[in-house]
Image (cartoon, rainbow, N blue to C red; front, top):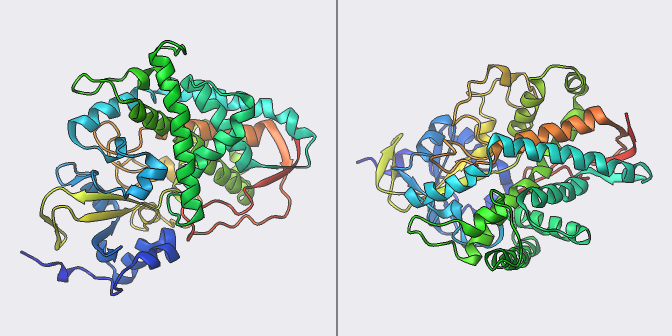
Length: 418
């Protein structure tokens, strides 16, 4: 049996500090240096195999080889996902719960959210007309919190929107953080879980009416394979796992605005009547700009692949950013070119901004359709419904900070109806 001496080993005693210092490029820097799709490293004292590319993604999403249980560190569960949530499940139990998520993310739900997004963007415009500056990212977070809660059947008072929006985003922002940012995310999760938990209890006790088919109703009354209802805490965690990713679309919308600003030719095409172009644009924003850096899983059993020995229980990281910028998969990957999606064949493993594989059977995010539709509506609003000036500001973004964003949040001035 081959030993892992045959695959590149990163020489460092522990790569944890390098990962924090290199962020999105940590895996990519090494696959390029070693001219290999995979290498072994040590993170927090543990042997880890890091890998990148379409073939690696295909292996990573093979449910007979990998499982998610034990892959997400507790610190990520306590801020981003919630403890023991769907992202940590495997097998039939995972598929059963995934079907619940899929039922809430069908094309009619996607269209409804896109329609709500446009309504709320338009309703915000009169308020912006008299204001000197508006930060797009901050506005997007609030609007997406409003529409996510309205669509899900979650009651939300106008005066709490800014605070709830901040909490939803702080959970996401804690992903790659240590220190204050991490603790902020944990506090936000505790607060949000308490809020949603009391709502789930009220729905179950009949004190709060939830419409059948709404996310609030479906989470409150979902039964597991053994016929038992989800515990109140777990129902709250999973409802947050529906709401939080909708609020996180604010990042893609902000990067979308940056793309339009930096590529005037793209703006012209978005103003034309080409019906395919907005979809290609949204996909290229998701491919080109950094969102998720990597994903983790653990080997289910001992096996070999590409002369590497995967031991049962071993942690494996899949490079999302590097795969989306792999020159073998994407012609001139560091150019922003929406037209590339005209020829794209829709592989499950070459384009993985929110994970890869089949969303119905595996761990790919079931909310990609919602992301794309809400992005399309939001960019349509920014390009075709209003006009604004973009003052001098710092629009750069760091590939070290995970997750990242244009530094200024994209400031707009002199906003007016077209």
